[in-house]
Image (cartoon, rainbow, N blue to C red; front, side, top):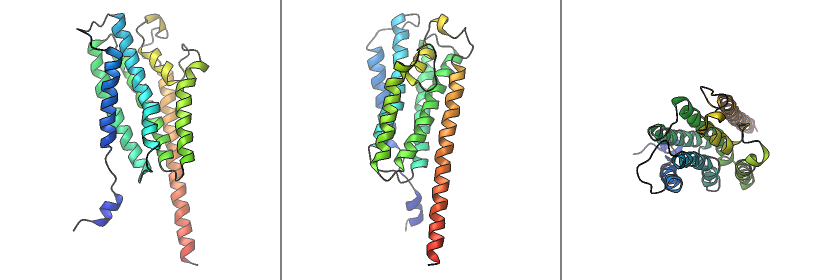
Length: 231
């Protein structure tokens, strides 16, 4: 006989997310690179295609993923499932972008910056997805989706593209993946390192808030249960 306690604590693996992320990456590659012949890493069109490919991945992280999760049914274990989503997406980004060094002029430092930026936004959006997926009503979910959409679309209009703010995902990805040496922030060995560190700190802060809220909510429910047992 199956263990009923194990069934209650188990949660489904994100097979749908894995399939959709693979489809998104494939579609982004076809859209940005097209059916071209042998690739030349020195080609301007090739370099621009890789930049657009990186931005398309970022759009999937900040818009498509939250929408697909928050506009569906409520998670049974929002924090664990969101963390599992983050692991799946980060692994997908890593195995997709690092081989592109063979097709581009990206250095190890620049590739590390790009992957860290995408991973940082995955963690940041993962915290928001966990917050919204655990909400009982639709208001919180819709507000998070709208906030992510407005931040992604409007932030490039509010800041200078050269400034590279961590909360501007599109311009940050474009700036770090550029091949123009004059825009590499004084030929920094790690392009955009300040923005990357700020982004990772913001992601850690967001997850701290989510986990803290979860602990407080659980303690509150335990207190209510204890007080109810004495009535």
